[in-house]
Image (cartoon, rainbow over all chains, first blue to last red; front, side, top):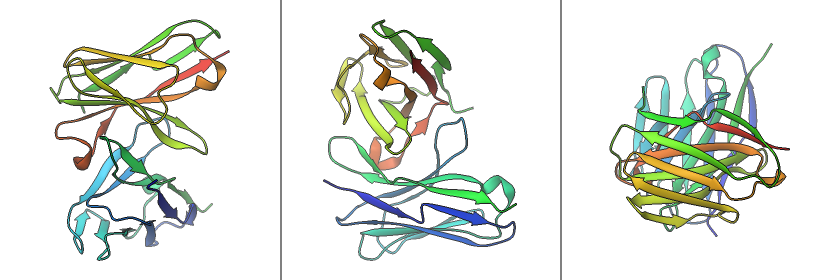
Length: 110
Length: 113
């Protein structure tokens, strides 16, 4: 079945650093969704992408829909402490279901 | 405020007892979903609804049933809770369907002892 592979699994970041993560699939997706989950809360939609090659920003976050339609990237510029959390990519599968990546956990370096 | 609330937020129950979790929305969205989230498994769809009285199974529906008698309420029932159903349960809503993303509730942490 369809699967999404997210990497890296976790990242240690220092405040002010830029962050990059990606999501790949063996099959084509027509939509890519990026979510962030804070501890004890549900995931929150950050960015939705609907067209191959599309680049969309939401504040310091920028996401791209890969040209092959099999990948997507999320970048965070000048990270701040509240960026910590788990970032998920997702794409529509069959039967109303979303396929989810396993998440990238952002952790602040002490 | 996203207009979606889950109740209860926390529950501890005994093995074999029935449990019902409630999801209530004030957004009048057509689509509603129940997910469970477990370490190592991520988010997995249990059941979803595409309208009043219209529901279908997701990836991990065994041991769960749902009902949607009104647009605003989507109930998840564990007929006879088992320890494997200890999890965090999230409800989500969507106006136009899964292609356009969901809004999630804050979750219900269920512990079956």
